[in-house]
Length: 165
Image 1 (tube, one colour):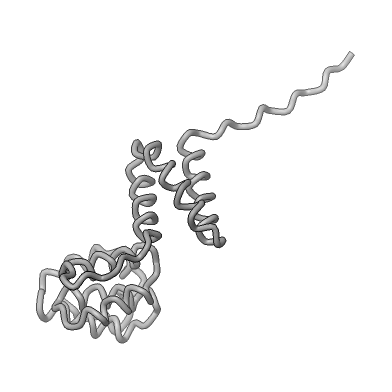
Image 2 (cartoon, one colour; image 1 turned 90 degrees about the horizontal axis):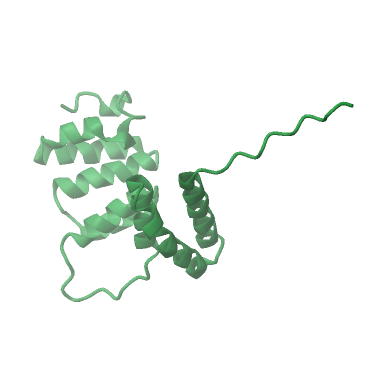
């Protein structure tokens, strides 16, 4: 009598894989028009994800991006445009970040550097190089940040970004 080989048991999903799957499902809800449901799932997922700092940060970032827009107060925090722009850049929403930075006006090296980052994400390299040069002219220490910033990895060898330092 022959016995049939058993098929291997399905691999159990690791707890982190389960969290990542649930995170992806919550994001899909948000992007699929069910924003409120997705936010509820993200909020429920956050306490479990605290053991994984990268995942917890991703959840917090997404929740911040999905937070309802508050009415702008008359006395707005000066750092708020930079925080919002950075949040959009981290979510690869460069167009939104650029709009915020344009509204912020002349903010010095910090605004120019963030504009350069947004412009690189949009593939507008010549404009990005000009914004980065303006930032470095005001604050030369940003050159080190430029060298370490992953968003600039793809353009460091581009002719527009040569001779910055």
